[in-house]
Image (cartoon, rainbow, N blue to C red; front, top):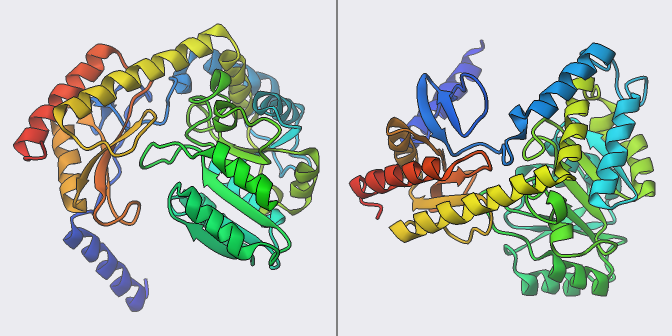
Length: 396
């Protein structure tokens, strides 16, 4: 290693340690479940995106095993050469039907899905308007374009309209992009009001539904369904890695936009397609979501959400503006948030600490996510731990 690189790395790591936010990976030993063994310790797991428990569901596991038996462990190429298999096309048809769009395109991750659609869509004569708290994948997708960009205050429709008014007639195309559910605060974007503004000013609409797919809307189909905006919303991006239980991302859109992405979406053009086992698991997840069993899991998720959120608020914790199973416990100082997370873990609850730059410097927190797999006994025990640790640290 060159001396300059080593000095740089030493300084960066020292800075993280001095700020009290240096972390090492927690290691999950076994399955991703509501109670899990992490770093050799049995804990209640409140940091998983496995909202419906599908990551270990028997039907998804069986579908993956069968696909390996029938089709092998890999696709062997990118989609545009010989990496498009019948099973990939089947998943995309199913996703389009689930999201009620003309077409869909599956990508390697939710992160790359944003780059895959924003890149081909925007040119240097265009404008993208982004919510201030949008996910890093949206921000990075925008950075890869030459389009002009404006940011509006979080979920502030007056601020969004002001930007639309100021820029009207200036750009060839205007894209408004927002998360559906915001991953750090757990609040829901007002897609209905964004759609009204977009229609009035002639803007294109795009939502990243990573934390809404499988959670909100008809059978978990997302925020467009939640607001009843079918036919009024242009682009839905999502992930197959959270409530769907596997891995990957997708863009649900028009046939014409899919055709453009087939030719211009760099994550599609330069990365090998999903293995058959992952694709089959995702199809099995959609099968389940469309049946009564899937709706029962969603209902259980929301019952658990209401129970746990009410418990935290009753204890006096600051849960911010959350409206979903993502419920932050806002501490403020980043280092203290990490200490809170560590002490919860020592007492048997895993809730990940979050600090700057993921959130603002004065908005450090532990982020909790309940799942359909938690029992009320799990959540009541976790609340007892939050109370004892919170009082010991004088947070409540």
